[in-house]
Length: 415
Ligand SMILES: *Cc1c(COP(=O)(O)O)cnc(C)c1O
Image (cartoon, rainbow, N blue to C red; front, side, top):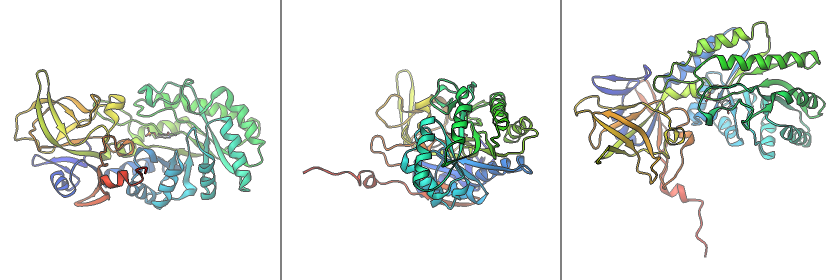
């Protein structure tokens, strides 16, 4: 729990607003974000990087709500995107395309065109085939595409295998041993302009050492390139800094940045970082209501109105999210499986949680600001949750609850 979510007289608040009030006004399930927490995270990067030529490119996929993007844009952020759709969101939110880096292994021709037309800062190229296609697409538009190669440094991020990306066996980036050749090739292409080098080794890293190991490998290549007369303007060290969900002890943003800066001592290139989770994860929670208490022979279940379609992380990675009662007292504590209404045994949000709840109690599923709403689906024809952003004692609806009609609006019955 951050300071921005706290108990006041036994009731859970988001900044100055009682979560009970949000539930009665906007319904549940509802994502609740703290404007102050979002702002604070970004400012921590900015102050740790103060005095250094840098750009913090928020990784849009962590939470792409327009209000979140707009807030970061106003704080000076650039953006790391992984699709043309995310570029459209950044522009719609008032972000600057010139501060966008485009990552991802499967960029299509039309996404490349869109990004070239918008004038993005850099393509993080992930394969030889992508480089060829980008050269061709840029040529057809009479443009030069600015590129970094996303180098796969083959270091173990020591995180969940589904979110580890910097090992040889992962699909991401250009193999370390092939990067030099590909840079040479890129250097000879008429519609490519080499501007940087990029790496991103995974997500939810809780130690600094893998980041540093990756930086060192990247710098070795940077020096090799310099010897061949290829000078880089920027180094993009990706995102991946972890957050505390339960008992993890990730480094603070300031510590992480200080370690990177010390590994980069004497380097003058602009430093780009692509944080996602660490900026938004603990700035959001998912508010849900207990529909039923179901007593089983072996376990008691609290069946809530949020489900795996709203927050997929427990089902997908067996991820832990702290679950807090909105009313801290008033009922006896009992141990429950916190489950949703979806027809899958994997539809759980928490296991064996001792909570003082009855039917209709409200629960807050914490640390849900990153990869929560952004990974949600409509499975079981469940309209997606509303999203609100709290700023002091004001609540702003930043995404309306979906309606069922919206879900099937594009479908047709055949005659
Ligand atoms: C997902 C992603 C990020 C952000 O990762 P976090 O763990 O959320 O910080 C950064 N860069 C790239 C290329 C990504 O795919």
